[in-house]
Amino acid sequence: MAHHPLIGYLVWAVLFGALFAWEGLALSHLSNYVPTLSDTFRAIMRYPFGRWALFALWLWFGWHIFVRGWHFLLRA
Amino acid sequence: MSSYLLRSDFDPMVGGFVIIMVALAAGLRLSRRPGGTATRTRQDQASGPVTAAGWRRLAGHVAVTMLGGYLLLMVVVILYYYVVARVGGAFIKGAFTGCALLIGLATPVFAAASLLTEQFRARAARKPHPPAQPDPTR
Image (cartoon, each protein chain N blue to C red):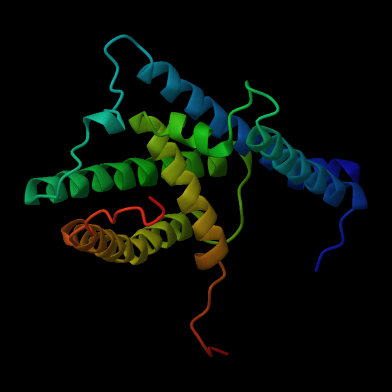
């Protein structure tokens, strides 16, 4: 496994932390102007291009997680 | 080291992000034009049992979404490969075949899940509701 500088991992941690914190704020209803992730996806999916973009994102994610670098079971 | 890091990680990441955001912004702008192709709301949808025409409409809706998403991703992948970073291996071929495989695997599962969900919903709707019992405390 390649070694990367710690700051690179920290940036990812901060980005994901910010994402969950923002969603938590939206769900807590403390702030009326923050939409939840579901609200955001619903707004995007009202339009065909938004649905295409989300499906493309889903495909990209699934391709990386399940298909790229995949080997048939028990293949040497 | 820092220039290598920028070239290998930061530039591709920013490039991919910018491509997706520009595509999203363009789509949003197009669909918000007067007379745009915004879809119907949930209030327009029928609440009764799903008819054959309804299934056909769902199949068409799903097919259009899958095809549009697949083509959009392929455009992004090709732009990414030729404009941002020449990823090693059979990247483009892998993207075309891998994503098609993923769609081929997911579509029957989605169809079966939709069919089962509708059957459960219809069965629950057919079940007679018990009559209201009188309140024993009165």
